[in-house]
Image (tube, rainbow, N blue to C red; front, side):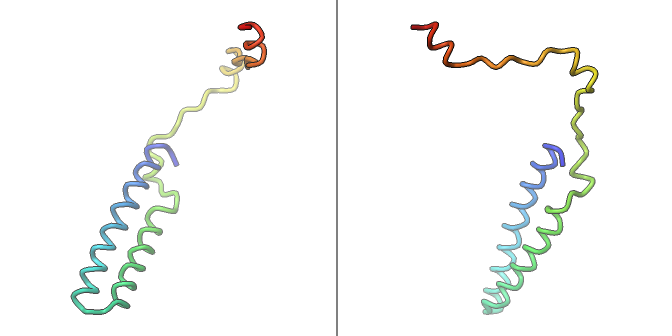
Length: 91
């Protein structure tokens, strides 16, 4: 899943869970049944899970272009600077 796909999944999850909570509350309040409210909300959670958890193809529309290994060998790797040598030089 690419970065834009992850953002889309997060937004979909939040919207679907809030919508299912509102629908569940309205249904439960209208029927006067806490059990019905919980069942409707549980159904909303299951539907949200089925939509957002699998790696569906429409979450992979913006694939990342990785650097080719031959191109990576042409460029030097960054050197790690030891912080203790900086402190000694500053003193």
